[in-house]
Length: 130
Image (cartoon, rainbow, N blue to C red; front, side, top):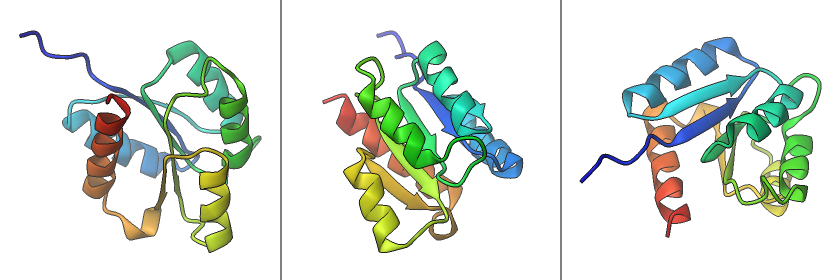
């Protein structure tokens, strides 16, 4: 049986150190990873690349993660792409707002090792394929 295509992850994050760390970790796990350093570029990349899942920071230049999430969910072409918020905003209101806007996951960077983030993404992708 042919090996299935690599899942494509779009990482929208403005911290270049984190982008490189997560890209390396996901690529070692067999994922294809693309990134954008701000919300506006992230939205453009979604339309161009059609990723399987999006990891989205909230605090970013040009357009914050909540605005990106709103735009993704309003567009029929991108509304069904799972979005996981990966942020340091851990207030209950922020978490609630993220899920209300349509995120399928909310990970606080300081609480998860990169390997745990990879495991969570694998689980979400598996569930979204059912």
